[in-house]
Image 1 (cartoon, rainbow, N blue to C red):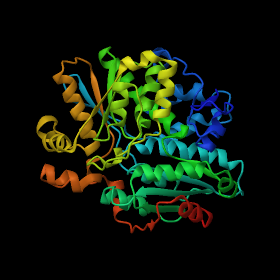
Image 2: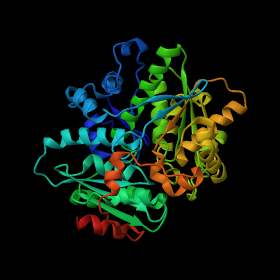
Image 3: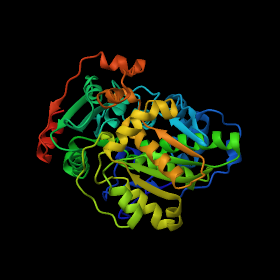
Length: 432
């Protein structure tokens, strides 16, 4: 399998090359040259997420050096509880917050760490590979946990100062060792722009080898498609009906992963994007015209993205298959509605929702109001205890963190301030 750049200005790459590079040399995002359909019968013997993942991912690994390592990579990375929980008639919740940092980013981060770790074993003794990641909240801690104390790797995290929750900020700074957290006094879009500029700096990369762990990385994107495959298969076996997914989304990686699973022939009917007040994606889906804009701070802070990187992949997919647009829709949810959905979650569904999942719940309610009869699954992207300052006043009681998160919160945390200009980032990377 080869992977091509969404900018189409560089030669196709094999999986190992694409994983190590993160971003294509022409500034585009790598994407599979083709998405082979997987007959549902191929998964008949699969009952766990790692088993489904091995079958689903094999075509992407074929012809590459990592094919023989696919089973241990899946077994070691995706051994996370992934329950499909009944929510209401014909409505479900896919809980993706049972990993080490209580957010869906754990799946992709662990998978990326396991793949890159194997690729780096052949080059032991060289300069460490620096994983540079911009985060709007959850990605940074998931990547830090996955790469913490991994030989041959350093992680540098850029996050918007004051625009992540207190517990998210603590997670980002609680690792130490080979993990450096840099807080930037601007929004996520600036963090992402700084990271992209570093990846485009060939002189810097010659001195400081860089790779990405943002959703621009194939190592993050491909494994995320596997839990959509897993959930849709569980649902079809139980009901003989396809499942439509409602995906809370900011940088669009998780949503594109769902579309990859759909294009691969899994029993997925529609993919719906639930956004906060950052309307870039809903406006694009509605009009077909893409307009990047400054991000707006909201209660669903991990989705505060005004120029999502993965729009490049979405546009690439739509250009190849315009009919895919018929299976898409998007909704923008304001803060007042997020509050309402969190406040009423226990009474309506017996659940406490994080602000991002609350956007998905509002989209579910919207679809029911307009008469949709689909079987829906809302993707629960993070544990509500990560956003205690928003959630607890609305539900009127404490929300206990899961044990792994509690252990992180008990550790001391530290971070550095980084000026929001590229020269400051470049100088800091050269001093690693």
